[in-house]
Image (cartoon, rainbow over all chains, first blue to last red; front, top):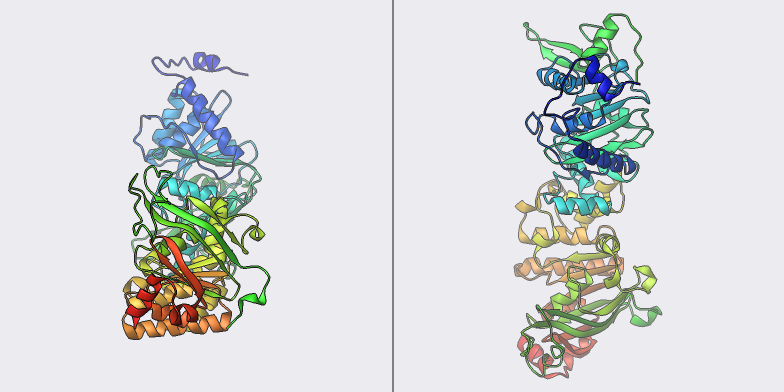
Length: 295
Length: 285
């Protein structure tokens, strides 16, 4: 088993002036405690002392702090932004993690032990050895119906979600369906209403009874929360207007031909639409003819 | 008219309700105020005694009226019953809560919410207080049903349209915002909201005040019809004796925070005993 010290020596790396993985030990301990609480009470938002990071708040500081507080020897890290490993933000975060931990990073979903993501859950099935860290802009699902943070906390405590349901009802009345696309509200463990961060509806069922651990970090709002493995996660929906995921009218990915992944449409020169996998790692794997474990 | 002796126990039994507003009420507050002293502010400490020692029973199927001039404490009584205010002293045993064994003022937050959303309906004088004007008329009614775990939009809309029809709100306006409704129509939506999940007790606070006379008549007719059809149990507060005469089986007369007279409505209006009630009745005609 490599130690942090061994890791540093092997890479001939120095962390002069910084702790291993950037965050100092006491801060890491505080974040890990908050995460333990979060795992113990699924879907419940736990406050934590969000630190200054070398990136701006709102650019993934919550996710980054969660990731850095978890990492140690033996971990393999993957960072994705809207499904894309090569996005500017994902690349910068990955480079920072590499420099501050000396760990290996990867693009392959199945090889990673910790995956930090924004707006997507990978289309390859996660296993029980993996942790997915999601960056969260707004952790409070009740924000739209209750402006007061204190009042919203009371509503969670009393499981008073009538106004949340009312907002969904009004949506159905005006638009004929619950129109929420990203961040669809879910009931976690039959107790707390939670926002799954702005992932598409497509990814919401992946939270239910999953093998992997999901951690959510909101740096600007100073909250972490979690969905532990094998937890019931049910999207809020009316019996006569059931929850459904996005459909792509039978389109396949223009690159890999997949019809069972989340597709993104981009305009083409002739005014049409071109569909492609949003998860670039999954797309690559399919193109290379490798086996993928689907959800 | 439903007779009070039909059932063995009252639905609501209020005992010694006292509400005092002030930084530090003194021991003499209650003794130094009231109709005899003709004031509700304690001369010793300046506290306001909104109501003191108010006791009454409401039987199932009965409508109890509370009359009195403004500042007499009648709205305070309703606000306490609807848990908007926590009284200083007193107990209220309600058939729909803890089988009448515990006072509703000992309820915890969650029980309180259940009382407000399930067992008791409230119609405020100002519809703005009882309605969310930025939610559709149907949505306002849906809120109480959703709180009772209704999870089928079809059922909710059926129930909401049923009550909007009963309260004569045109159905095509069900999905409009009450902010754009007239005062009378807002009041009718509020009544529909208060009644939609069939609460055991309905509290009506000055429901016709501020409406023009023809609309008043419509709203009163409506409440009377509902009372007849659904066997409504209600406490109705008004300073308008006409409303009380029309709706209430029994009546309390309040002055300076105290009940000065109580009895059958007809009896109080035809043969008032207390000088203040006599004044009130004489002024009304």
